[in-house]
Image (cartoon, rainbow, N blue to C red; front, side, top):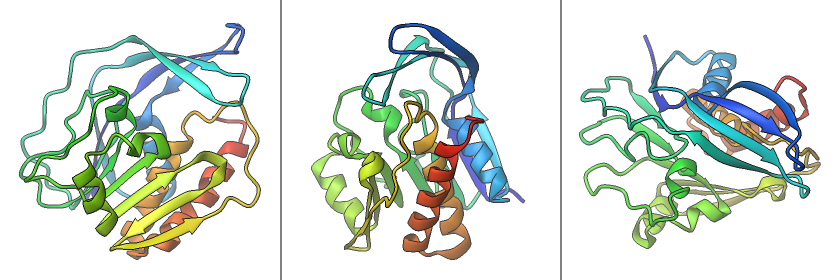
Length: 227
């Protein structure tokens, strides 16, 4: 039986150096990396996705990457019923809704796509998520009331090689990266972290262990040559 429904997106990624030199074309998007991580963790899941996005990814001189959407398909049709006990929503833009009204299970939301619109993010009153993950910049787009609420439930704030902050049931935990991986290609790192966190949390119900495990797996991912 499937444990998790994943509402996400695949993309065709075109990778370029900072000087626009073409590097490679490959399958990507949050759905690609989430599936890979959930498969590794042996978590039964079902990926629901729409049409393929097309993204140009340019590595910058400061070791980060910028993504430009070259092709944006129409928004996906919202599922009427989701029966799995867990739900992940992770988007490129706003192709999926922020929450599924009436969903009774435990939901995990990645802010990455919703924050790219540059607008305040506010969850529906009848569909608050259990866990929200975002970078330090993405979390700034959260509605102040939702931000306070999530800190009392589960909020993960990632900050690259500087570490991770976890707010769980009103308590704050900090995780430092002892040896940050130096790389110009971090594509998929956030999705790998989130997928591992969710998988470990489902298996252990321990948010601290889930963060520690997610950090280790993300470092391993960044060191690999098969990204």
